[in-house]
Amino acid sequence: MTAPVARADAGCTTTGATTVCISPGSESFTVPSTATRVTFTVVGAGGAGGGGAASQASRAGYGGGAGGVAVCVVEGLAGQTVQVTVAGPGSGGGAGPAGAGGLGGSGDSAGSSGRGNPLPALQDGGGGGGGGGASNVTAGAFVPFHLTGAGGGGGGGNATGIAASLGFGGPGGSQGLALGGAGGIGFPGAGGRSACDPGLLGGIAIVSRTLTPGANGSGTSGGSASGVPAACGNAATGGNGGTTTSPGANGRRGCVVITVT
Image (cartoon, rainbow, N blue to C red; front, side, top):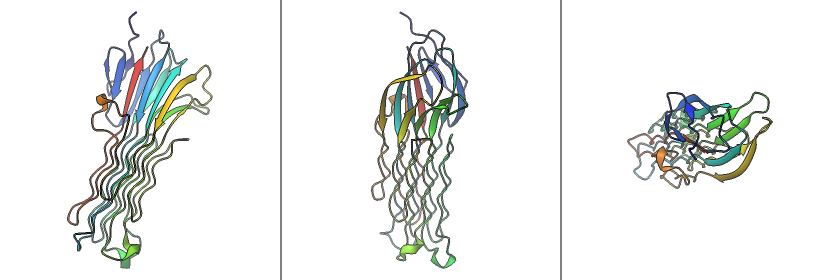
């Protein structure tokens, strides 16, 4: 039996029954009318690393958290059009002194930007990394159907010795039950969560779900993501913390893979 051929906008690549979306932004996807089941793998973007403090070699920034991964197998979507959003990653926090916070990643729910300490007298540290955005597949207007991989939190910036001067990492983007990772404040960013929420779209059934949270950052290292399809490439990972002379590394973008049977 020949698998139904999926139809997606130009921002995604379709080969046979599988569609891969890796470019941050939103696209529409039409499920074939003959489809019986659709498997969505939704991957959130990683949070960025925080910036280090300029005066001490031992004060590198903290790593960002990884994005969450949701694998949702859905029935009842034949002939319907869903919106697919691939999240952008968080940007790294600047090195101190007075390092600027990194920008939050784009997405259906964008990550928050990191920031340096708001008190001028305490701005000797690096800026916090931006949180990764949430990737999402959705349909319906009233209590919509949501399949979400939330973004990882940005890592905190480090300081030269005054704890209050640490940069604040931005939290990752959230959607419904999928919570973005918390941004670090003197510690690494947390990993994002994931969810398969059927909402109130009539006739839809989620027949199985595998929800894998992104790993938290660890020290200066960004968190890793499990369950990311090979077709996504280097997605969802958190950025490493910056050295004393360089900003934190950006996180990695999200991804959505759709397989129709």
